[in-house]
Length: 131
Image (cartoon, rainbow, N blue to C red; front, side):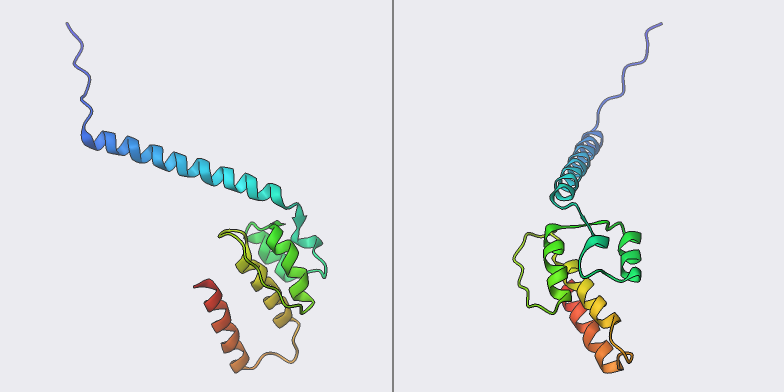
């Protein structure tokens, strides 16, 4: 008795295979970028001077941020020392975090606690950075 004929490849199967290949290629690109970016900086956030608060370091670590990007390593210390900074860098270089971390640190150190107006202004600044 002859074996049954192999199933035919449909257009849907071909599209799925092409989609799978695209997804695999995107993952390879992402992995290459992560490796390249992680090789650029070997400065842990915990070694930046002036040092970050324990609570900020814990949050960064819990979110998977262990090493500062070159932009972050260069700008966070300057901003924590109240210096003016302007950064022109590629997307994904860590600019947003480089500005948010010092902002949180400075606000964390303010006493007495922030007024509701100050909190509102802070929220507006953060949202403008994110969007």
